[in-house]
Length: 233
Ligand code: SAH
Image (cartoon, rainbow, N blue to C red; front, top):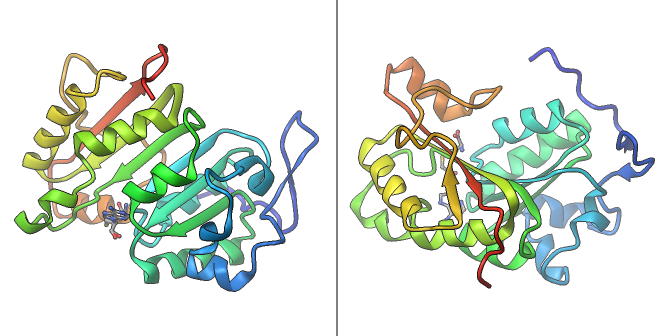
């Protein structure tokens, strides 16, 4: 990537004269553990912690390569990650530190719970869920992320016109996602002529995306927008 990381210290939000930066009151050990959010008043005041700028959430970021690359490309935006795999989370926190990215905060836990608790309604500019189930197994089917229940939560947390991005290599899972999305009337496809896109809408690849492209797998991407009308509460 030929984008320079933001310098350590603070980053000015263009035109805002405000500083972005991780709240100094979060102890480093809680940042590394990813459980700092349990001490916050919920939903979290993201402006206090990260300043202003578009607020983007990535769910199931793995080891966070995609999240960090996006955050470095857009130092004027805020990136929040949710991942239940604590070791992947820890690796990302270390990389975020060494790159000096001040616009990233990440949490460990189940995305159904965290998305529900940590974000107020209509606060997110985007929600991204990439390759959430790299080795689909029937026994995982119930807690999968491409469900009507999860998309309803995401729709409530997105602002009007906010974007939901999904990607999967698994055709049956793509079909499940398409059916679940169709049941959530607050979400509208940006590609209504086809159920999914076959080329990536992203400027950088995720770790699994790179792996699957190398293996020659067919990939499926979805870009949906939250409707402009108010969401039912
Ligand atoms: N998005 C990354 C990683 C994909 S692996 C990439 O594209 O490379 C899928 C990740 O999703 C795993 O790390 C898994 O722990 C996470 N995940 C799956 N379901 C989750 C859930 N309900 N809550 C939080 N993380 C979840």
